[in-house]
Image 1 (tube, rainbow, N blue to C red):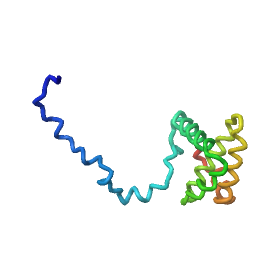
Image 2 (image 1 turned 180 degrees about the horizontal axis):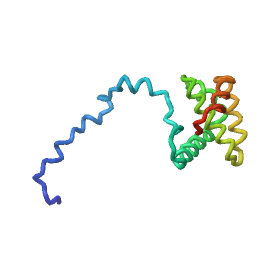
Image 3 (image 1 turned 30 degrees about the vertical axis):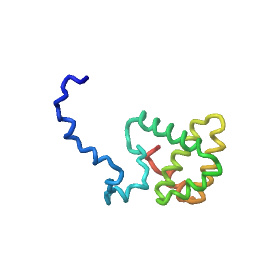
Image 4 (image 1 turned 180 degrees about the vertical axis):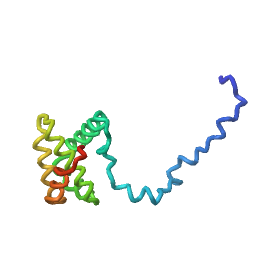
Length: 128
């Protein structure tokens, strides 16, 4: 049995604020909902490496037949550029079977982003 059963402090928490029906997306959030929060300008290399490892795990876990649908979901050209940065970084740290899969990703992102995507990635000073 609880020691302090007469306490009513728990009633001060508004549990209804966590109800899914009450969620309202801000207009500012709507514009940024399609962007990737990649730590490209971060100076901490550990953060960049963690983001790279996570991104590579996600890219390599998506089946080749599902890559087209994933690429079509990218509505912002900047997202293709960020994805291309991670693909090139993935080429720098090859593992068994990753290079072929990343080449498939590269082909599909190139088809959507064009040569401009590659030029922007290679000329950008902010590395993924």
